Image (tube, rainbow, N blue to C red; front, side, top):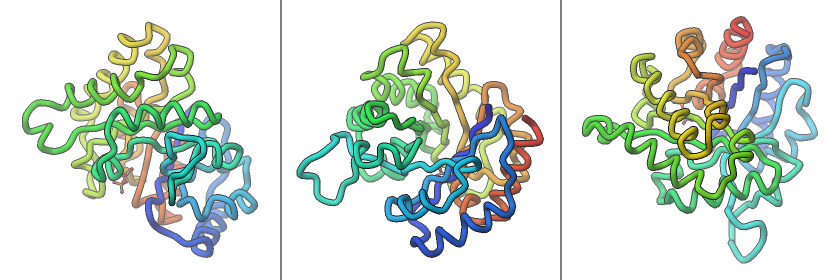
Length: 249
Ligand code: PGA
């Protein structure tokens, strides 16, 4: 089962979101074996839930609060999203850059699972980490803390996205030589923390994904899906990504 998670980021009001899903619906055929998730801004989720073809598309949030209710002005919780979305990004690098700590992210992963939402936990190194040979350490540290509130059983319900931060929005993804070792690191870390079975956790890649790169990235051992950002806002490009993945399935 391949997973494609489009991250719209802070783009598209409800009207524009509706136009995009209308076009995507025309361009994309549902195919068994490929799951397509649209991570739309909060304000778009409810109207989209009435509009999308649920056989083709699933909805995802881009973030959620660790608590279910309370005095947290401006926040949206997993309890509020429950039933509306099946997925949520957690710990995206753009949120980490705003000050989210690994411990805070761990609580969000737990909050998602508590509310029957599949967390797509994003991990990845900065360019500076890579230059200092810290890539592996950064990923292991992120995973160790971000997953610390979970049980071995929970691991089968999560998705981990490897997103090298320096390649996000860069136009060119990381190379297979750069991606493959990190996918192995993710699986071996999860296995060490939660046992052999946990190594089967779903792992996807994100950062500058576009149609032309799909084959190369999906052929890397252990990559089970993609997380396009910019390309998910362009219906032709997103449809290209989907059909390229479907051809491989
Ligand atoms: P990009 O974004 O595809 O535009 O590089 C990916 C992401 O930030 O998740």
